[in-house]
Image 1 (tube, protein in one colour):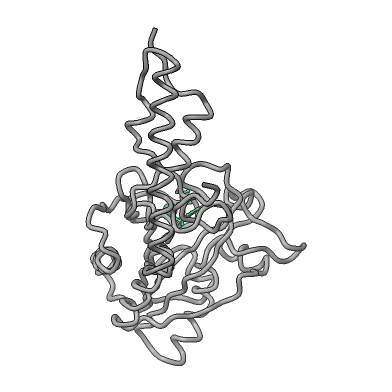
Image 2 (image 1 turned 90 degrees about the vertical axis):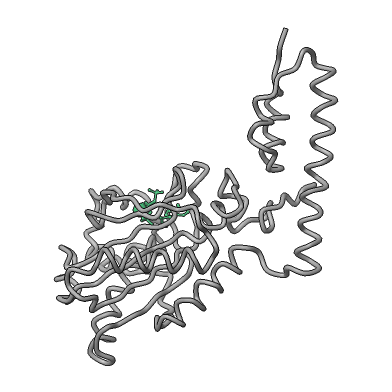
Length: 278
Ligand code: ATP
Ligand code: MG
């Protein structure tokens, strides 16, 4: 009779980032299975420990942090200015994004009090800044923010309740050149982090209508949008613009081939993709 892993064994192999092909392995009996499990587990534990030692002795910073730095540097070289805006967002800012009660995203919002929530995205704050910076600097206005965003998610392998978004935006892109510019900026960011295997896909988003997504296989890495857009008038924006929001943990996942985003997210169980309770 052929058999496969027990639920606990399977879980352990996933936690230790065992190869996906391992999970389908079949055995003739429990003795063979359990012996194989012990051997693989030992090897995976060693691999995790080796990685943690490398981090201690030479890497010093988790991949998500290093990716963030690479992207920031590349954006600065391309003339994009970093901004830091509040993580707590007033209700009115969400309403201006049309995220009101019957909007699908509204159920994902973490409310701090009646009037304040944890930002589910960076777009409202960036939209807000564009008008002032346009007045002060003139076009093109090139800015970006990178920082925590929060969404109530039903715990899939690709979603965290708190994740890191990097959102860049350029106001004053010449009319008609928005999609070409989006492609160029997406390529620039992918090049900065050394991710070659990505595709661009047209998608429909709740907030933005038509979006151009950056994907790696089935995994969405980022969403690009452009204006003139129906949300623009609420923010006093009349010029063409382009913007892309990347999930930094998703980028780390794609680069490392992790199947679960929790490995690279803010965590007490994992550090830089390695399990700690080993
Ligand atoms: P998805 O369709 O994968 O749920 P989304 O389209 O709702 O993502 P966007 O609003 O486009 O997400 O956010 C921009 C980027 O932020 C996404 O492309 C993704 O990389 C990242 N992101 C969004 N939600 C999460 C999350 N819960 N956990 C981790 N990353 C996320
Ligand atoms: Mg999206």
